Image 1 (tube, helix red, strand yellow):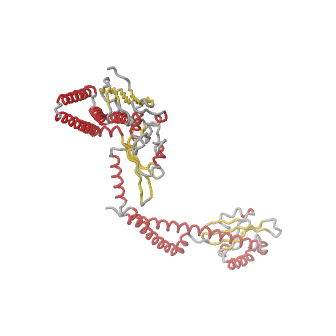
Image 2 (cartoon, rainbow, N blue to C red):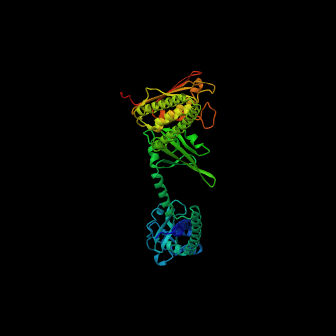
Image 3 (cartoon, one colour):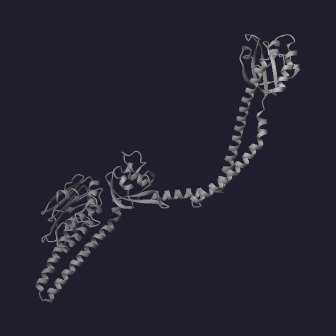
Length: 527
């Protein structure tokens, strides 16, 4: 049976307040006892000094029959000062006065009078014949003040701890009752406020929900990192730990421990960030950042990391189909134009020319498809080249594929999607390099690769680039086209190549054209 939060807090409050009141009551009584004894000691020693200075007492201590003179004086003083006893003893510890006359003439048995016989005055607590008491000892000196003749002892009985408890029991009980009432009321208000803040959930329900959420986030096929508003890491699932694990990083308490160069720009993002490419430990990830607001106030953010290689593997089928669809669309458009031309020639009874077009087109297309089938062993890359070739015709561009090209296998640690991204962006960039007024537009593509080597070169006869432009073309967001959404393709190419420790060379001359070459080398195998 589970106990509700409200009942737990009521029980806890009752126990805590009860213990607090009892403890504080005990401490209070103890403190009162200690202060009371100090006050009684000061009072006793003042009276003892007065008694020790009385001439009759000073002169009769140690004298035969001196008790007859001393006892009445001591008793009158005792009654006048409301102390419990005044005892006068000589240097042999013989009593000359006592509240109980039967004790006169007997030896003082306190055991704490030795120092007083050596001319010291002090206050002590002891068990005497009348009970626990605070006793003041003051030496009695002769009239000249040079010789000690006895000791004046003034005692005041102290109340016992039990008697003080009994005396203050009503106050302690009243404090306990009021403390319990205030504690219970505070517990009710606190429990109500906590329940309100936790949406009416009990602690075990919150714990269960937290465990479920944690299990879900741990099971997700992406890295998840939760941050507070200052960028401190509050949660990382196992996949995020794996992605950010490196021998150089011993602790990951803040975002800057993972992204030392870009953490400030990430935290300064005013809007959510979706699928930003970022390189970490030579691997490329798709990074998304989402801000968390509670009642309109920013309280933190969370990041998701997806291994781009894994994402490309999952999307390879889609990527390949899309490339083929683009190729079919371009080819369909091109063939429709050819068919219209052939139909027109036939209607004009120019059948020879129509037949020549059919033969040329069929022969060229079959030759290209057979070349790609024989030399390129990845359908995604083949489909891309076929689609780009048809698109080139639409744009009035001649795209030629170097006859020495081949692709036996995709290099290790690189996906077909990465090759498609590199090749597609380079070719598209070459298509866009030609000025509108140029008549002969030629682009050449050259690719060679196996499981340990990849070389891609795309050259055009476009307008070329200045040295300043060459240094910026791989910068994220930079583009010479001045159109929204541009400046991303070559930046992605650069990130992929850098993550694989490859090289990029740009050879460009204004008015002559541009050639971009990419090489990723794990060691060339013999053909």
